[in-house]
Length: 299
Length: 299
Image: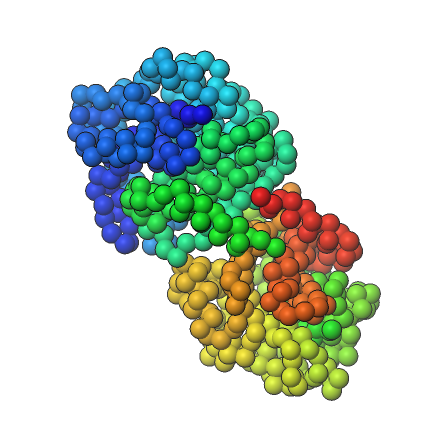
């Protein structure tokens, strides 16, 4: 089955102690879509400006990503610029130019409205809701978010949470949302806000999934070198949804493995600037690393 | 087989947002010895003052801990007082009274010198070396440390490292010792300093073991409530060594499981002040939690 992914499609200028890379392909939907594409067909919903490089459209196409829902509007593509500190754990935004994103209203082509799997990647919760309202009867809906929306759009986010099957967020966001330091307490509090499945990401420390069949501690694949963690969380949730859409049987039977695939694809994402590493891997590289992660965790 | 454990034996006064507990039984050797005692016979080497409460000697004895190597000297027992912040991740020392510990020279009773498993729990590396020099031909020697020794006794520590089978330290100490942010790079650098097995602890994020059979990502057991993390690291290494001493077959076959037991006993330690929780569990509680950790990590 296929996955519809809505989110930001952007140009990222990223500075790390290891180098500087201007105008990379970025945005939550770009990372999530490429990650999902290793597993199942993807329909991308987003907006770019007329300055959006043709080579990035070609990149999406090489990954078989359906671009019928990608609007190309007069104006500039959303441009984000950020800088990472030496240990890659903290980043600061240098510049945010919304461009055509400022007036973005996602409109779903009719065939998109029946897509069974929906990933509302990180954008304003109002836009996530707007997309969800256009869907017929999706089988499984997941959303990601970021601290910004907790700060400026919490009522919308709370409205969204009631309509999700799965909600993915990182540990500091979970803490901010629930006022709970304890991970298990935070998971419980988020379930009470709606979602059946909650996944809290902890960066290089892995993630924890909570659902009807209990909890799952998902390890992160240990990396020799983190080049650029931008998009790792988007890759995580993209691969997770791509795997779920492709897998046979009930969600409960597949979601642990889906989270593991998320963890593995996120690890590849961190090994290059932007999507440079992720776009150079094949499904067999992902499966190999998953097998290695299994060996690393076996007891 | 039995484990000889040398380290500090102290009275800890611990303040957390949850409460204040004066003069608890503490010290690296106390925590490690109780943790190891669930698995194998333990010989404790340490020093206390005449003020050391008789009930704490009885506590050691209830755990079958051999006290022939515990000196009782005129003067006061080592007293540490500390305070934890709300999220339990940072603590500050309020007071350190060395007492009889200031002039402590561990002297091993003759039968102790042939103990096959030796745990040099956290004390000055010079004292760890002094104990090691008194041992006949131990089968397996492990040591723990703390940031203080990296700051003030690095040459001794480096001397010690060459003589260890296993070295256990936490992530910030590993970073300080190796100047490497990356965990895998730090593991490699520490192996080059001597030990065949290196275990880096990451608190509530689990630990990573590196040895001749590769690496092992050991999860931490997720807790509903952390009451007091003091001694968790000591419990970890104590249980690990206790399990190894009791297990049949080569170390390589057992060390993953030993690290898991360390993780589980450390989780119990965090659930009470000082040793209050650890001393109320039985081996079956440990095995139950290990089985649960297995279920939480299975894929």
